[in-house]
Length: 547
Image 1 (tube, one colour):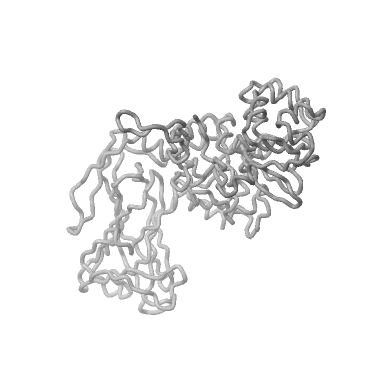
Image 2 (cartoon, rainbow, N blue to C red; image 1 turned 30 degrees about the vertical axis):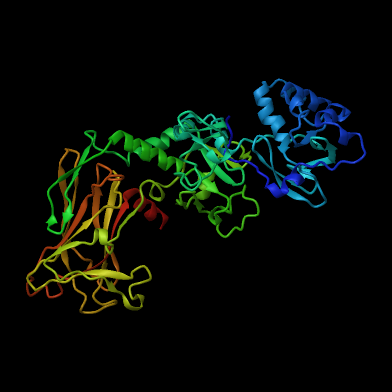
């Protein structure tokens, strides 16, 4: 049998409470739920619907349930009768029936898990916000409440993905579905002739690797009725536009191979090939980046300003945080592309959007800050003393500068150089390259001198070979000698992405002069490096426009 992941279970000690009707001497308590419903003149329409769905037999049986019966005239009975049996049962009848005893007392507040596994709040004499006009009507097989209206069925967010009309997103989620045998909820049967355990009732659960608890790629349990999310669902047109835009940052060689020069203890090694399933990797990363910017949990404080968040503790009003922890700074712009009303689901809300207005640098093409102090990318060096991580005492250079590397020549004639791995997932995109330089002495001082240096990039080119991009005879800015200087090296375009591969490009920085004439006394072959930045050109242009 098929069963969903969310199930309600009573402990053994509570079993009697859940399965005991509060009977008295009245006639109702001696009858079944079906008898009490079919014999009530206020519930003739509900009885007709139950009979069509085959639930007259269920409510005659010994199975103990609670029923919230909507009063005649409070809903469109004709449209419900026009439904096929399966839809009627799943979306209407089961929405008003729950296992076990939900007896109501004054001030009682409980969460009801209905037979269709929806979570409905019962509080202040209401059921899902509907007034309970008559309550605690006892029957031999359950409890009956009569409500003023019907509990509207809301699919959960995951279910609605497949009803939304966004075929692109639905097919992506469908791809990750799988069936899981839940042994703990299955009923054990006999051992077969081969000594294998059989089950008289096997519980098979439909799960999804995107939304699985704890291990899901999106970190969003969109089937969980106890969670609350907002999900953006792009129209098919919006999905395609985003797909094409993002995929350009995940371009891989059509030959399925990318080469790189590894940095080893012996400096630069021989070229190594890395195999990559180009189209598969490009498509997978692109679709994951789209999906990763769609779910937002209401429990994250960044999202508390969203209009649909109940009792949000609003502390800022522009940034959204996706369940994959992408901080999106233009939240109002993203939500402004909502088409029509915000749609209520059983576990949150859905917004249909005609554009995914996410900044690339906050998701699929981020700024890359090379971790020059980590063991994995510790620079190779030549012509200088071993570069040491120095602590900046007292935060002299500002709160963001804590340490630096020093290119300190072994003698006056040496030309110090360093190699840095750019193994932070360089995309196929245009970047502005920067080197963060520190002065010898903070502030104006004769000790601060000019340095001339070269920067070279090694990467896999469009011609199928490793190429170099050279920026020669760069000179530190004399105006900024006494300051922290984010020095602009130049623009570099990588034709291929390195994401999800073992390959990487590298940066080679070298002091290119070791002799200076008498007029160049303010030159030196020392350099303090606090960081290396690859900033997407599009992001740089955005920052300049914001100034």
